[in-house]
Image (cartoon, rainbow, N blue to C red; front, side, top):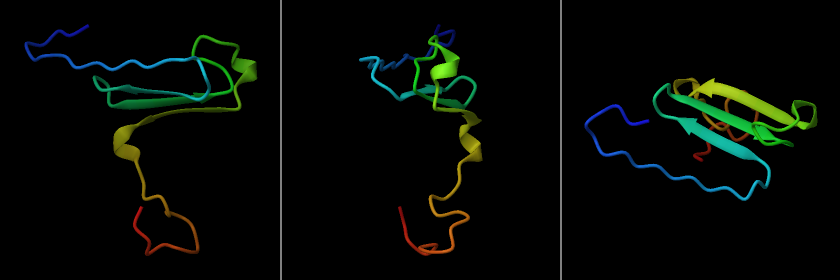
Length: 71
């Protein structure tokens, strides 16, 4: 629901093929599910992540090699 006066741009693409990635711009969250859709059987999920976008890190963070590479 767009409660602002600004124009809302929304893109939804779904073939129900795994994984499922969602961005919630109002709360700055990113959600990733693999193995089952968001409303699917949670026991079938092989990966699940809910995080805030401002917790992003460099691709090579924590790796011992390629730390000077740019991705």
